[in-house]
Length: 385
Image (cartoon, rainbow, N blue to C red; front, side):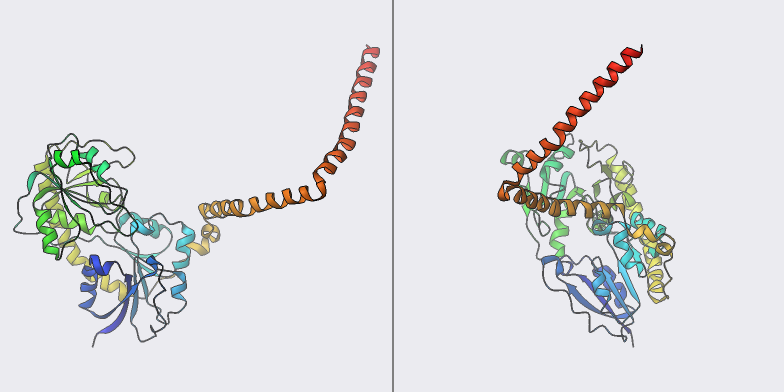
């Protein structure tokens, strides 16, 4: 009989299926209970009180809260953070999860957490390369606008000096973002076609396969399943020079990277060679991913190690950014309140007039005495000379 584990994941992934590969792996060894977390759309927290000591492990995928941990009787807790959500969090955030086991799909995030004393396993996911690839149109590009970081305005600049003249845009933006439509002129120039969602994943992949180029949709990724799947299908990837894309792609070698702070047209020279290198990256990486699956299971089974970093560095949990954020909040809310109270005090019974009069009485005579004393000293010095 398989041991039972709880998997707490982002409910939106039930639609995108982006955590399926990991759940499928876990299901080979465990009885997996999926618990959807809807807090991202302001709904109530998932009920975790039912997770008792009979559960072999609890895995938090992408989303976690320190308050969740209080209700858990199972002590074998694993957190799988995503760089796009947790990559810029300060040490004061990680302090609350210092004694959890961490599985990282980003080398950048993994290195940061290892330096903070975490019991961390660093893994890179690679999909299985597609054997019978369909050749795409060398002048066609697929772009899925998921956020407003990369929209049509960005894409137009990136492709402006290329021979690409056919673009398919998938318009299903992530929650909270707005689709930016190309102009009618651009639609004609680039022969733009659209889709909003697909009934099956095969429909989506059929459109991707018709294009030679694929634009990674975000500046940062948690894993980067969309562009990795495209690489596995022989697509040439265009991506921001940010994690996790730059952990898989080297510019002009197995893909094309651009600087989000300085958007410029890309020169797609040697695209055929880049494509070959991209496929080699996936093929070699997939072999390593298959071998790493045992490491994931061993890590879940292993006992945890104590994190001594925050004991050795007790003030590390008071991150400078957090302190500054607190000061800014105090200034924002308390200082204006203090000014309002001061103005109210001065207006009452015209106290401001009384304060000015008293100041004149105190400081003007004092000033006159200072001037008189100055001239007396000066006169005395002149006489002595």
